Image 1 (cartoon, rainbow over the protein chains, first blue to last red):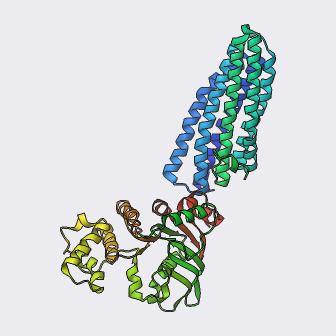
Image 2: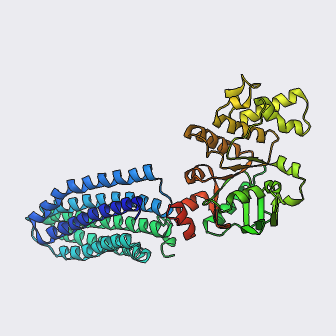
Image 3: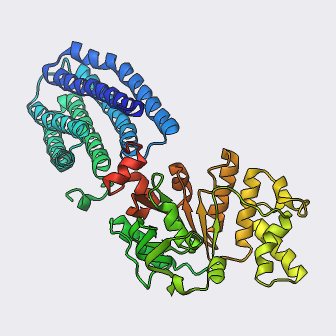
Length: 221
Length: 275
């Protein structure tokens, strides 16, 4: 393997290590909400600094490769995709922290019926995250497209969940604080799904060389 | 300038779709080759090259040594005719005119050439640039002086040589000599300029000056450049063709060639995985 290819592998490995941390943070933050687990929520807050540090290191590595290697074609697309995925992963880490903070806020609140929607939405969102990263690892355009197709379903679930929570709060004004926390949890999940969609779009650019952002009609080609 | 912008845009759109450029009489191509074969004796150096060089743009030809890119360049002003036992087959059009039917000195006036190694004549700076004009019958002193100044300005050399026009061209640096050769080629107002690795012997600063010059010249002159330096092709060319073993593997907008080439051979070459 040429030295440059080893450097590209190192970039991918670091990005995947960061992805694993972010996936774990998302899983733990949601579990902390559902199971009211303070320790898990605090572990998400603790890992944020490490994720931020990884973002800086990956940017540094990628920009160094751009400056020193002048990559072309597939190599160029890999490095630019890595830079963008890196930013998305860091944002997803932040959103997991937001969810963990809501989990801490919800520790003492009683369980309400609307919470049963959260495992459903989070299951779909975590599946999108996993598929978008698998699509990156395996350069799988079809898998990336399947992530794009899921985004609308998450939006619909968020909308339905919001209606349910608002309705619940109208009937139970004493639970408004709890309801607001849950709306925030769902909103953060929906934004994590948006970042997974961004990653899937970056994978399509990496594999096919096409930019499908803001072009829904191109997504299925 | 005769560039038909809308036609060029259409060409670019076609190329975005990955459709190879087909020679077509109505395009704004300055030079069009169709099924061009070239032989050095029995050796076939070019295999059926069909390529349109868009007017008023820079077209780069890249590929490994011996791929035929320089041979192809030399067919565009029939420079090969000085080499014994060479033969070209197929068609080349210059502005829709049969290039093989154009009288040779008229062709060389219309399609100028600059080589890898600067080759100024053993004359003064002024006389180098005036040479082509004098050969073409421009004897009027005032006209000559005006044309020489204009050519040196177009070649971005005037400010550096205006006070020593009658010194030997050999007194100039390598980069200045190369720009002098470009000025000499520009003096007869060519429609197209062929550059055969014009920066390969130059340092980065002289190279940057030539590249900047190329980007300015394309407003008035169609440029075809052969280069081994892919970053140079990426910096200066609007279109790029990749040659391999005498064949044109891929021709497209430069951005596409270096970001999303369609052919695996092109991808392997531009990413350095060739061979």
